[in-house]
Image (cartoon, rainbow, N blue to C red; front, top):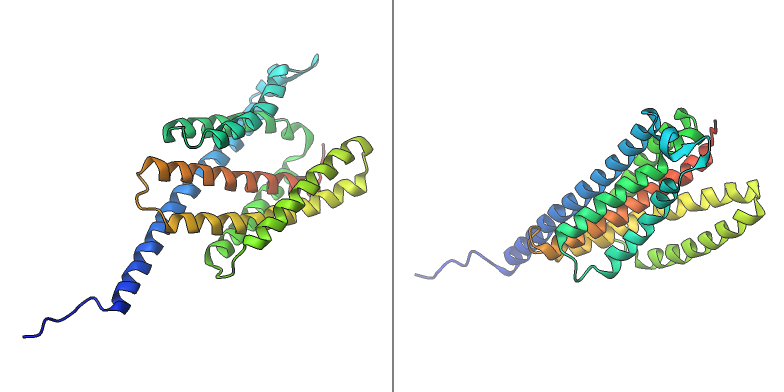
Length: 244
């Protein structure tokens, strides 16, 4: 009796495609979980410091700005370089700790926003950032178009934007500042879709989310998306204004 071949070539391809999709979803779920953890920690820290009185008691006092606030503002940059340069040697648990510390320090630095902008502008900027981020994350995850070229263009535009921001720091043009904010929103909206697509491709090649190497990629991906969201929020906040 002839043996029935259950796994035809089409069945194998369908099975492999299903497994790949499942791995990508599991990986992306982990990435977004870490990312949301970071955003929530940053937001809660900023809100608590502002409304508990600790901000004006220890960070921005009548005597001026405390050195602690400057540490909170510039230390995260060092942590990003540390995580980037030490990625191969660093344990996943160490990277998670650094990511949490990074999100907390950003919360300390961003607490001063509550003294500069009114609550309405902050809520509108945060809500708008959430909607834009969510939409572009869906686009990046579902689109079949390769966004690599777009990502390269956006990173070049980001470098140009940073240079322009430094120039405007000395020039102080309100018109240029408004234009910078618009371009910043466009850049980080596009980078969200690009980063999500790139992370999805990494997830499709992942084998086990419990593998330390895979978890490090998930944490590093969460850092990328965290930066996209935070920068999108900050540029939108500049656009909405609402300064106290």
